[in-house]
Length: 336
Picture 1: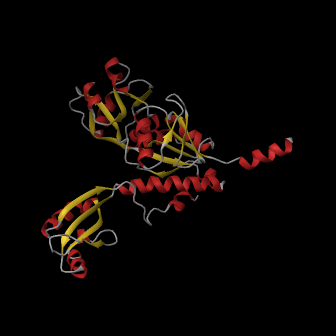
Picture 2: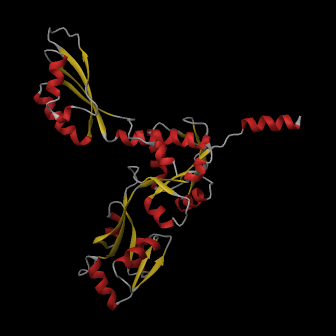
């Protein structure tokens, strides 16, 4: 009986793909919304739960962690895929088994910046700061000591001391804990509110949400690989959809061939592959056709102007939810 139950459990055992997501901060809710918009609905048993599932694939589970812990979880195969800010990843990535598979996920944008007191009126760039540091050793408060040191050393600033803090960095100069700061900023409002200014060339990193993975862990298991492939296909399809719009319109033409020739005169109206054309059986005795084309964002304005010139009617622009094409080479992303 015991052997029978063991065999049943062995048959039902699955090697699940684990995805680590931020458990708090600005990226927490926006990451859940991103996955939901990509068709991968995340379910948690409660708001305080640190695990989740998705009906998109029952072989996938989610865990919610602090961003600083996610690279370690990926490296140690506690999780296979993770989402976090690029700034946090670069600061904490001293692991050999983590790889960036999607560097820009299109949300969570912020800058890692160098800011000094506004009263330092003559110091506006890193060159000014280097000159000032000859006279005074600078104390710099930051949550990003590794990237701060790398940036300062690259710019030949030698006389400094880094004060690592886990609290509000912006108040450090006001409290006398540091002379200046290096911190993340989305709008610059908090920095200005604390009487600081960003150096003209003090942008260390342009960061946003990033997807990392342990490719060795994923490739060890066919179940994990197939689930990862399925997840990535929809995420890339969602990101790809942001590059295109679908335009539907009605247009009067002698026949289909004439219509195609007229549309092909305009680069913006050729679409990704070509237009889809269907006959409209109208009541006004005119020879109407319904046309659907997929247009890239950069060609959208030109397409609308060109359709106006062609006297198109009922022009409707639809925002795409998912766009799949051959450029989404998921297998290549996952192969080590």
